[in-house]
Each structure stands twice: as C-alpha cells, then as structure tokens.
Length: 99
Image (cartoon, rainbow, N blue to C red):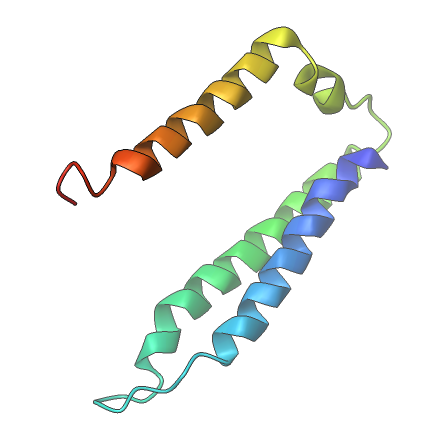
C-alpha cells in the first residue's frame, strides 16, 4: 500500500494546482484568459501523468517496495543533503551573479 502514497499525493497536488489556476486573475489586455493557459496545461499534464503513474503502481501493489529503505541509505542521504545545500547556495548568489 505504501507504493500508492506518492501517486495519490501527486494527484491531489495536481487537483489543487488546477483549482488555483482557475482563480488566476484575468488579463486586461488581449485574451482575458491568456494568463491561465500555460498553468492549466501544466496542471492537466501533471494530473494525467499522475493518474497513469497511479495505475502503474496499482498493478505492482503486491510486489516488494524498497524505495523507503533505499532513502535511508547513506549514499542517498548524502545526495539529498548535497542537493539541498547547493540549491540554497544558488538561491543566495543568484542576484549577485547578475540575473
């Protein structure tokens, strides 16, 4: 059952994203719905891909699921921490680099 947790979370995130996309303010110039098109496309693709992912994982629900145990391995933990640290460093120096 733990295999289905992430696909369900992605489906919920996609639904929330779509609801928030509908609440984007309308444009005063040109097509009033134009600010909504790209976020709506991203939300729909996220929802569709999440549903496909859910059914793929649902078919494999009786197989062993080792992703959580792999998360606790030292090598994986170091990669996660390093990614977070490098992201924070990048965010702090982004403007200083001229962007």
